[in-house]
Length: 539
Image (cartoon, rainbow, N blue to C red; front, side, top):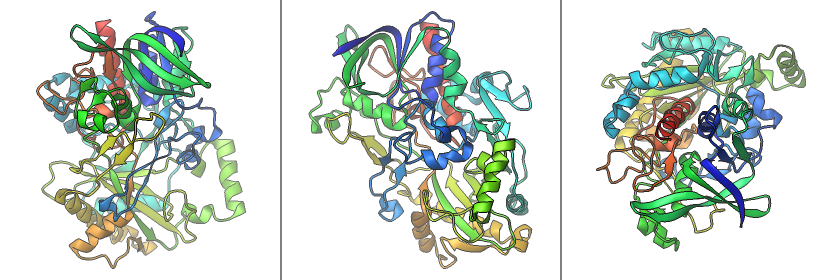
């Protein structure tokens, strides 16, 4: 085993959180930082063209290619479970939507951790610090930061009509979803720069490469953390990994896991930090008992409702001919706009599934296109898709190692729709979508429900329909969650430090105690920002 050297910090994973962490810990600090990434450089052309997510998800060049276990809530189906395996991680393959969630999300985290620094008014400055908002700085936005936020460079009549129909159902038109209360309907802001994807690698990693303090090793798979017994308990002293056909180890004063909600718990488990019963099943010596590692998996399940339309311009028709495809390509080539600049979803809406909800608990991603499932060709008929998800699911899954071989993927058990509450929210969400589609603002397009189908009518029918059209919207969180010292299932404290283990922190979406009310990428930027600040304050 070869030595890769000694460092002040080792960061595992060059995804969204890892890029932020590498920037903050290495720039202008004089600290030596090693960033270990299993994937390759982000030099694949389809990473940077926004519509290229179609070619990055479920592509081994950029995706870990995970699959879930068969899920009873999805009528026995298994899903692809995309996670970025490339510099920039999920920010290189995701939907580019800039979304913070709701103020109540962060206030809840403060209550769970007992640390008021997680409250909305205290994390808002962290969001603003990294932001470069297209309209400049203001009460809720920052300018001059690394994380570029722009308006989308296109609009669609069918989406404008959906927005009008939503307003007819009490969902007001809004311009900004990121002020603490995101209820309403409008076009999403996106992490793009002049029609090109702006991933975390461009934003945070490339500037950090200039200072000479940062070493990046791509194509390097972590096998386990190096642990020693200290006076106060186990201490992480470094990392063992493989790369370039060789086995390596590196040493550091502090190691930070930024491998995401799937990778971070898996590495902890492989290193003997988990539930002892799970470790013993796979003959892994117990280093430190933490039963919460890999538990508490949460995700947003989207139900993809498809409506055929008449007389509407949709991408189905535009992309169905060679001439149409050429026009789309030329538009992007000369103006960096049009369908090739599209985020996967353009129009968003946040609404309540029923009147008893204290705040919006549903999110819509509305698209001027349709297909049977991800990876399939577009339908031959004009249609739009209204995907709706439960923002605060009560169902919980888990991530658990499948064997003692670190190269084998862990088992991902999602347990979608496993609670009565989630089933009822799903049924009400389907009903609300039907009411929007039947509203006067959309009547000129004569929407006809194609999926799941109007024949699903009763409560039990709708539960079954939710399982049939439900799929992940790629927001797994919570598997190394924060909590108080008396919380037996908490994996890290409010500063991201792994409980009972020295020299080891986690800073990614896995530390969320509960999922945010919206897309999870930019909250992950904030988490890394906050943990990095805590680490530097202790240095």
